[in-house]
Image (cartoon, rainbow, N blue to C red):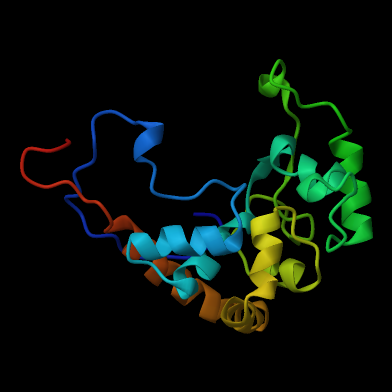
Length: 189
């Protein structure tokens, strides 16, 4: 993985032979932090794991459809999310103009980097995500809400100043995540 976070995963995992949206155990990027924490708790993960694994949002891209409400009609108020940094909002609005995402053109949905402050761009896992969150510059609402949860904010603060702490916990949380819903016996392949 980009960013040189190394960890050993147990081998021999059996996975399903088909994929079904109904069987997804990880929350959508559209849910609240509280709902994501509840979903994580249901599969044996905790606030440390959620806060840590959200750090992967330092990498990759996000479809505009997941931020349109924050940019233009936050919680059906007709206004943008006031907790979003104004500069970030302006940048995202430039990439995601209003009415560009409709049910008819979802496949043409634009993408934006998940972390516009990532010093190495969207292809490297590092702790810059936490600095973005603490500065009010998270792209996704779930990420920004992380800063409002007392325990998650404390964890994010430690990770923002301690890249090795983040890397070590990321490895632990990934191994923990990989051990969930492992198929046994004749199930999977």
